[in-house]
Image 1 (cartoon, rainbow, N blue to C red):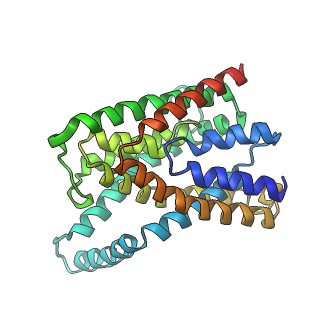
Image 2 (cartoon, helix red, strand yellow):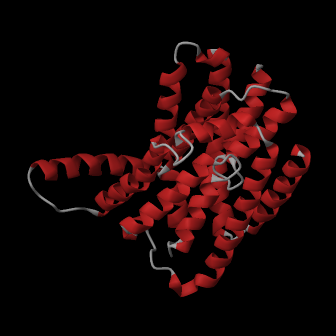
Length: 286
């Protein structure tokens, strides 16, 4: 892998991680056309670390509030108090939304492998047919979410992050789990659609989707780093750093762009794009 490859893949990761068009699917497709035969899992996860920096940059104010809420809640717990602030409720929901990800470490019934190993196998296989099918599913979910968003009108039951319920958080968390398993299934698109189906305001659903990615990205990075920390999977630190910086910068603007698209109700463009890309991927894979 060269520096130019790292820049290209970092740009792809940063642009597609937050837009509802699947970063894993685009990485698989870009690696196919770049002729990168080995799907370097650590490099891919390192690119997610770059997009983590993007989230921290855009949502730094609310993240600071949540950190303060954590210590306040901890202090209340030690004092035997049960009072909870709005930020404390958001923090609790974020914790609950991450609970389904623990299922990644449990074996799949009758298969004898853990869900995370099954997900890694799908990612390593670089099967463009599977990626294309997942992209079509992403397109379908975005279509349903967009339709629901347009017709829900006064049926929005949750208008801010602090009004979200634990049930909302868990359901969105399961959507994140499903997207983590199948390359080509957009995490932001899946979790956003789940939030809309729960009656959450579209901007609140999008903000929650981005913020809940923070612990998931950190956990994925640490898991892969501990697994291959001795070899760095054959990729130089210079190449990894280039990819991380590129994905961070591009990811920052990607978040801003998606928030604008959602505000202007232009998500149908992503429906068309993921459908076309999914069909193309299936044809190329065949």
